Amino acid sequence: MFYDRRMGITHFAPDASAGELHETLARDGALIVDDLASTLPGGDAQLDRLIDEMTPYIDATPAGGDSFSGRSTRRTGALIARSPASHDVIQHPTILDVTSRLLHKATTFQLHLTQTIAIGPDSPGQPIHRDEWAFDFFEFPSDHHVQCNTIWALTDFTDDNGATRLIPGSQDDPIDLDRSIDESLPAEMPKGSCLLYTGKVYHGGGANRSEHTRIGLNVTYNVGWLRQEENQYLAVPQDLARDLPDDLLKLMGYRIGAYALGYVDDVRDPIDALRDTAASGTQAFASTD
Picture 1: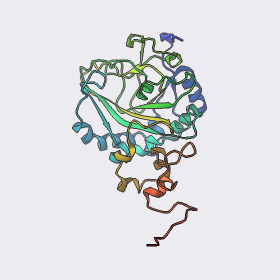
Picture 2 (picture 1 turned 90 degrees about the vertical axis):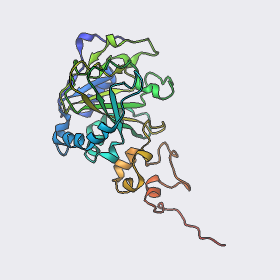
Picture 3 (picture 1 turned 45 degrees about the vertical axis):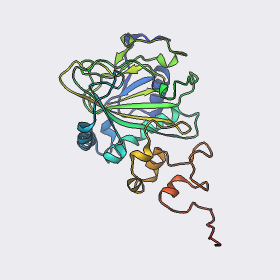
Picture 4 (picture 1 turned 120 degrees about the vertical axis):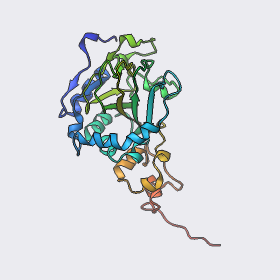
C-alpha cells in the first residue's frame, strides 16, 4: 500500500477519543494530536518544567557516533529518574488507552524507552527505518503490532528544523521495500503536540536546515513479552523506584506479565521484591540450622 502524499498526516484536537485515534493509527500508522500538553495536570507549562529538568543532562550528552544516531543529535534518556515532570507525560491516559488498543493481542504492555532527541543545526536527515527492527530485525506479522510510539514536540516541529518524517500507510508493507525518505512527509506540529506512530511505519528524523535545535520527547511502549530498549531497572535507581507509585512501576516493567514472565525468586511480584515485602499468600520458611 502506497499512501497518497497529498493527503498529509491526520491531525486531531486534544479532546479526541482514544477510539477514533486508534482507528486512524491502525489505518495510517501515524497521526498528530495538536496541543495534547494542554490536557496534562500542569498544562503546557509541564513541558517547560520537563525541559528545565532535562537541559543539564541534554547539554552533557555526547552527539551520536554515526549517521543513524546523528552526529549532531543528542539522545538523552532515563527521564523517569531525571525529570519528575515527565511522569504524567509518560502516563498520559489517552496515550495509554490508544496503546492498549493497538497492542491488544498481548496480555500486558510496558514502557519501551524514554528519551529526548535534540537535533542540532546543519544535521542531515536520518536514514528511514522501522522501529520494530530493534528486535533483531525479526519480521512480525503485518497485522500483529508489538510497539506503539510517541514523540512530543518540546519545540515547534517544522520541515525546516528537522520534524520527524514518515510514510503513512507503510506499516502495511510486508517486507523491506527499500523505502526512501523522499517518499516521506514531515510531521509538522507546534510545541505541545504529540505524534503517534506504530513500530511498523517507515520514518526518520528530518534534516535540520535551521539555526535552532529541534527537541522532541520520544516515549515508546511495547508488549510485555519483548525486551525493553531502555533498561528501566538500571536507568531508575532502586532507592528512587521504591517511592514511585505502583501504576508507574508496572508500566516500567515491575509486574508479572503473560502469566509467568518477570517474577522474582519464589514467584514473587516484582513490586513486592522491590519494596522488600512478602508477597501475599506466600509462606516464610525459618532456618533449621
